Image (cartoon, rainbow, N blue to C red; front, side):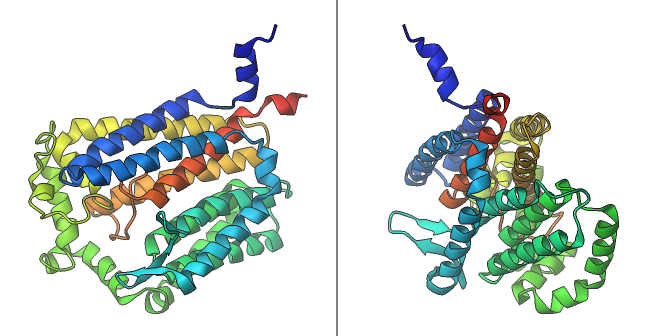
Length: 366
């Protein structure tokens, strides 16, 4: 007689720790979003559909063997590049930016797809290269990273282009980049900052950087967002003002409460205690991913898990740094918390791939 329990155990691949913690984080995000949207139930329902579909998508993506992703990484990156190029020519323009493709059912931010595709492709390309990586493979990888990051930057989308750049460099570093090359590249980057400032940054992006150093220079203009964010976070105190009781968000002082500055709403309403609970869930997910990376079955899996988990960390870090005024406002959602279907789905896909890399170990032993 067939043992159904053993059959399911052999056929279904899932990491219960990641799945439960991400589900918990997603539910918390819906609760926070309801307050941040000032009780807009339509917004929460729409986000709920993305959460339910995303969890299902994460499960589906986690089932194939890692070899599937290794063998099809080229197709994944080419498909993502085509989507980004289509966006540049036929994308939906909002506030002067072309970042979305209108698919009828919803608008897809294509840069969110390529930020996941790039680490997987680079892991597939570099996993079997001898250590340390030679100059040819290093420069080939850097050219691809810079090309893709620049395609996203000109949409313009500085925040996502930075994440893509960081994600690619993570993989290159984890794959065995020499410290000498890192030192020389860092020095070259510092020397090229004036050129980057004058040729690669839009005027509004330069203004955001200047505002970072002196937000009080224009408190009712360019410094408004970060000033109100700091007020909201600071006024939360230890226990917060209470759910839906945040004055900065509900009196419309704080901008972009559903997306970029939702953490400020959480800090104001739930205080230091609520922030610690939220950050604890983020930290648990990160530590679990690092554990899975160290125990992965091969180098490709380690690189992929490491790259995607550090991509997750970078996105969280950039959003938190942005809302507290450590870095300029670049437009970066908080994973699984902020409103936005494309960003949400991209992280469900990323963690589905991570789970696939971590759970398919029996095939290696056969």
